[in-house]
Amino acid sequence: MAFTQADIDNLDEAISAGEKTVEVNGRKVEYRSLDEMLKARRYIMAVLSGKAGRRRSPLFGVRTVIDRGLG
Image (cartoon, rainbow, N blue to C red; front, side, top):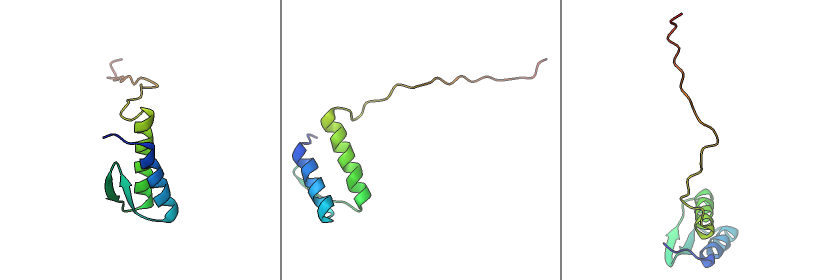
């Protein structure tokens, strides 16, 4: 799915007008809430910046230690 800046612009316009129906990627989409629209906007921005789907490397490791009380 190829998003464009126009898709972001359409979402921004709808958000500012209080509308819930937007044309995104050539299709009309009806959102249920402002929160859903903002999530879609963040996702499209991530896709456009090339960051969507990237996994972050862990900042720390986890080590499991079992104390069997043998002493």
